[in-house]
View 1 (cartoon, helix red, strand yellow):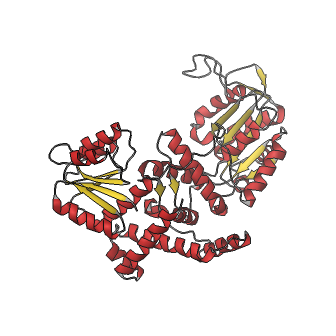
View 2 (view 1 turned 135 degrees about the vertical axis):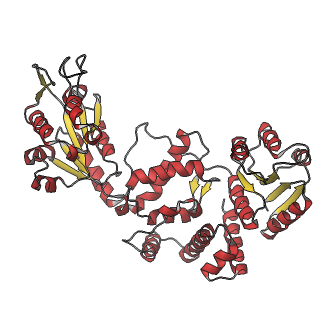
View 3 (view 1 turned 180 degrees about the horizontal axis):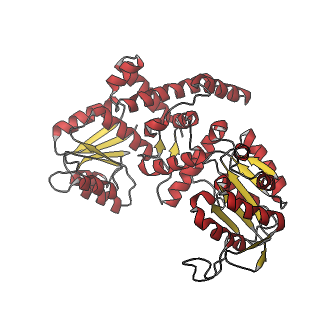
Length: 462
């Protein structure tokens, strides 16, 4: 049975909070001051502490400092009628788990306590160490075929055209081709042709001599020279101006070029990998891209599927991105709840893998507690896909689990379904149980009972 301690100099607040938390099955102790609570910590440690900020004697912030100095990793929820930016920021900086304004809503406190109880459990084990350089990951059929193609093509010097929507990871494909090639010991040089002004693009690619144009004070080696013996990755090749396409064609056809303003013929031993999210065949038809250049680049074409076509990879990608974000920003590791992973798998993801990674970085910072839930996901991202309805996704999940010979499939999935419904309804209604129950078509008592059952199942898990 979880034990929750309350510190507040207002006896009525201690009584109301205590009764509400006891209704949820918790054991509650209350204290009129921070000093009394600290004295009790010498003999016992609760799962969660709820404390007022301003109390006679030691304040809630002093209580936070004292808990930290004792080396106790206790989630502390602080409450205050003063919710200015300075007070809130100070509380979080001192280690508060959450900051609730007074007067508070009991459902809001209950939700915060439930999150804090999950926080008090041991943190998830860190993911095994991976290579410093980001790797392509996935087990979807389209990704497995892509991996096989990379393995076959990497050992050659063939030019490669990587296609796919923005954010699918085209540069990762190029890096994988380079890393597993005979050129791996030499440079990998990446250049986004759409990000460089057209008047500077030629100089960036081929370099320039001193005095070639205003501001060219000394010789500058271009990307082809920098990538000598290695790989040059040209991203967004479809945006390259036609005049520059002609010069690039000469390098690919003859392996030589001149610097801007130069007379020295330079030989290039460079493998070129290009990428685009555009339809280059259509651009050729419209006269916006040279057909002969496309033929030179498109010796081998590798296509990266959008995230919506490899939904089975989303849980693995999300866990990896969340762990990486926590490590990069030196934050405590977090995990996704099954319901949250289910919601992620149903999102549209117009920004593909990059959008998922950015969302995970945001959640690593903003989501309270160690477990990320459906209510933590931004409402703008919580839209289901137009391709497959939720019932189709559920059917696919059932078939997969039955095919693996799993048992107790119905009660487990039914519990997950109920949990997703309750969490989504509570999040949509600001944790107001009455409004959530009304929208779901349940009685408030029924919703409370189902919430209690869901919490007991979570606590019973190892």
